[in-house]
Length: 103
Image 1: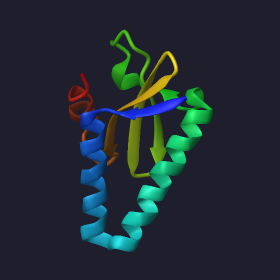
Image 2: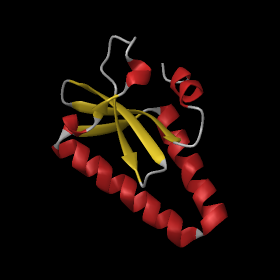
Image 3: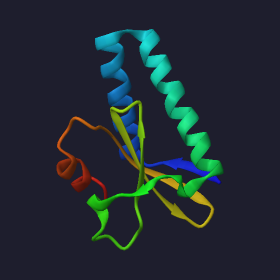
Image 4: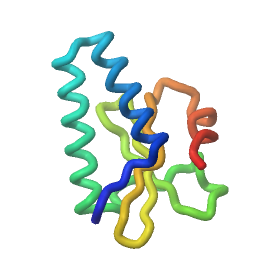
């Protein structure tokens, strides 16, 4: 399956990566981005591997999520043969506020 990043998710991923670079250095940021790529490759082969996200249970689309490095949450949904990454955030942030940003 093909992976598509929404504008919001792409921006959020870049914000997390920039935070990691500033706090922990470029080497750690590269490791993080490699983990993200590895996870998206895994999703493309096994799209239902993520759990249904209860934050989005009131939505008509089934949103799923995977946790990356215990600190980042990648929210996605599947439409036909495309996996859309809808959101990407630091798990230490308020989840309901983060979920409200997903349209």
